[in-house]
Length: 291
Image 1 (cartoon, rainbow, N blue to C red):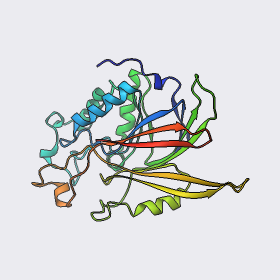
Image 2 (image 1 turned 135 degrees about the horizontal axis):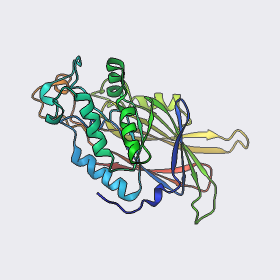
Image 3 (image 1 turned 180 degrees about the horizontal axis):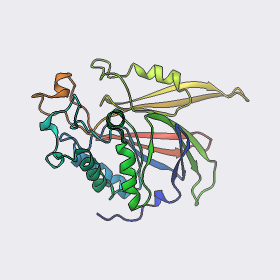
């Protein structure tokens, strides 16, 4: 697969600035594809949908972030969730873990747009049980094809620092994203929306608050009033709360982990998010569903 040069990647960098903090620097507006819970190696992963979204991101110069559970990795030894029929045929070998990582590498090496990948419970489960990091191993393989994605922890902060484009003048914008792969059950009635107020209280400085894990998918914008400490000027701010969805289909409900736990049919895909300047230090976000 070949693509034209991606101008939005010119001058766009990502780096680790603290153990749990990362900085993305760019010129002009920047567009993100925000994903989680891809479960790439699962037989139930909707790879056609994933490929369609990543092809679009690659062609348009979109910055792709995966917030945990790129891998499924439930087919290994000692995993109580394991079902032999749920393992893809090409992984049914003694080198199961190696084969899954190698297949992800073969898939992702065609995409330069995947720039940030953080851990989910499926990755940390492998780290605890098998003493190896599948995401770090994947990044080492992708390093052969240029800049690999930055590998992050289970939660943290991302500062997006947007400078004026080379064709325009203006002020730089700063936006803060708080991500956490997620926790708890899939909240059958509330869908996890009750967490919005708690997250808003804990992370009042965030412009985007991203959560995964439950395979729920929704967007709740919350507007709050803040006051400038220097001028006492009233500032109205909107925080976008996102549950990032999944690319793992439920299946036919015949049997298996998800069926026994009573999981609902997930809304597949992630979110497009575009950050643009407002003429002040704050940025403006536009959120669209990727489905």
